[in-house]
Length: 491
Image: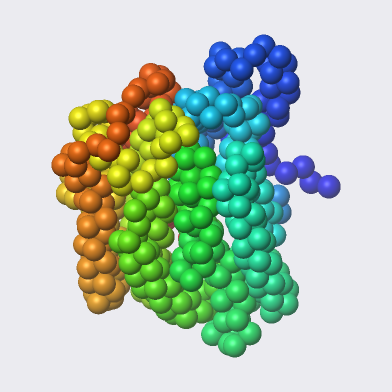
């Protein structure tokens, strides 16, 4: 048996060692009491693992390696997403201790589950075989189910995890059935091999049905309507840092899998799957924005907002298939990077506010009233992230939407870009409404700071805010990185 090249999976091996170390060290720390200091070691191990994965990934930029009989590839495409996942998970971990301590649920396995989820996400981006894609997706999904139910003593948390598990299981089964049909039609599961066989069959009914089922399974992971029903309930019931992680990490991993699998494996049906994602994008943008308009819970509003943003991203995926060119896909990658920072920041501020009033604060608009006076820095930061999500110039959100919609126009789908821009304008109402409540409404109760902000929370919010501004003001470096990464997908 040929020994596989392990260089492509060094970042994942580092994460695996760190996750196992967290689980081994945790039992020895539990006996020291419920204080914050006894969990510093496991959090440090998790952050060290993510830092090691990040450094190694950056060191592998420019390399092209194929391992495990072509199932896994190391290229700039995979490196881009590995770096993005490591940063997103690191920011999530930094914002978590204060929140978990306020709820008396600061356990080491929390960090291990995040690391296992990141391993699955990394492998999804690097996969070039449907079998590896499915295994990686399930590793990510199982870790996510457990994270959603981390507050297992709360009925809402258990309910959200059960909904996530049941709907996720059905979506995985649908996707697996689609993969079996792909194998039945091509006799292969490797993306390249499948593309070589099915490319000659064009858009036959059997191929299109298989493509449809695989697309539906992955559409669930990106919260595309009508497969979005789980999203608001899961985000509201899960711990707020976990909801932040769900909104960026698994979503970006699913988009990386969609673009890699469909571009390489289904070139003969490129127009058909492009049209499918165009239809999904319109429905998703409409559903996300309309339902977000009527929400009075900010956390639930951000959940529907994430659905709308999935719709914006799907316009780029659909345009990439329709035009048969990579330019719209590069806009999707840049948007994913920008969205990671601004959405993590928005959820991070909510996590901080919840840590101050763990029992009474429920993320409602009325509870946000007067925040500009009681906690000015939190109100200013949340305003920055909400303005970025709206797409105000000078922020990362504007740059992301600009490149995505310009790619759609470039593909000749100007009408789709118009729909996206108009629905994006609708989102200004529910984002700006939160800002109005924070600065122009009287508070209904007294806001008391029970727990001073931790260094980790402050660092996570600071990095998110700085990145949101830097990407918005100087986006050229990120666009260049995205362009060089996307080119490697076609090797």
